[in-house]
Amino acid sequence: MPQEIAASDASYFLGFDGGGTKTECVLADAEGRVLARTSSGPSNPLRTGYARAWFALSDAGDSVLKQQKIHAGHIRGICAGMGGAGRPGVVRSVTSFFERGYPNAKVRVTTDLEIALEAAFGPAEGIILLAGTGSAAFGRDSGGRTARAGGRGPWISDEGSAFDIGRRAFQAVVLAEEHRGPETSLSKQIFAWHQCRDWELLVEQIAKNPDAVFPMTFPLVAKLADEGDAVSCEILGGAAVSLAALAASVANDLGWHERDVPIANVGGVYGRSKYFDNAIDAEVKKSIPRARGVKVEITPAEAAARMAVRTAGATGHAA
Picture (cartoon, rainbow, N blue to C red):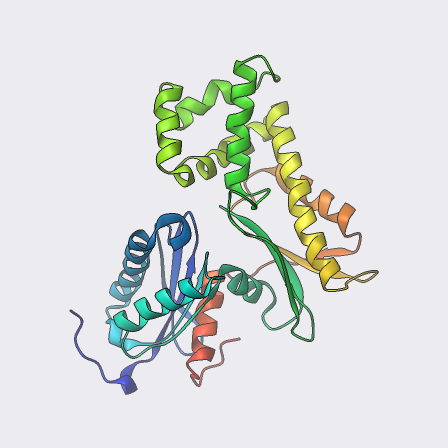
């Protein structure tokens, strides 16, 4: 158990970015300066279950505390941007978990979309196009009004995500094997990629935990697309169309017609394939002719740490 520490001595802040594939955690001081960072397993409780989420969050938090040689009582504020936090029950459970583990911390639990928007634009207006394990677009105008599209989970939403791309890759391999679709280099590499000899073992893995299979297939599709595999290019081209449609939906909801639209790409699918990145940019331009790309300078976990400073009312200058 960590030693008791007076609330007046609590001067550190934690930012969490908890998703369906991994959790990132940042420890910061009252100025928002990053002192330590780490990553752990997935912590979206709707996809992993609460037990695995608690383990990932604890592991990440313990790791950064150990790096700085401090204890849980030293933490004054926590902001966690979590996949699944659009549901009030998730927010209540995660908030309670942090309050029990960090007795001196003021806790804020919000969505991963909120901290990604903060990372890209701070308090200013803009749209983020998030694509990782899941996918969504989220935007805010100068008056604080927000709009969202996607991000409802892999079974009814998340088009263009790593999960969706991986699932379509498996479909393409099945169609090729049954002579109902074109040949693809995916057929030759997908089993070795997942270290399985045959369909039986691979289907067992998918049934047990699809999040451990489908999103992890995305890097293979990205690699083969850049090598010219036509089927992989088609899969990523379709994903780009889907992602652009998410951004266009948010822009329309915000009433951003005939004006510049600042858009930031955030998430694990970006920067993995030149073909895919170019396709996304092209499709966004088709859907939103005056889209303006914005480079994200900090990670969502860093943004969450800055939000933790503000939430706790610290006297630093985190912005």
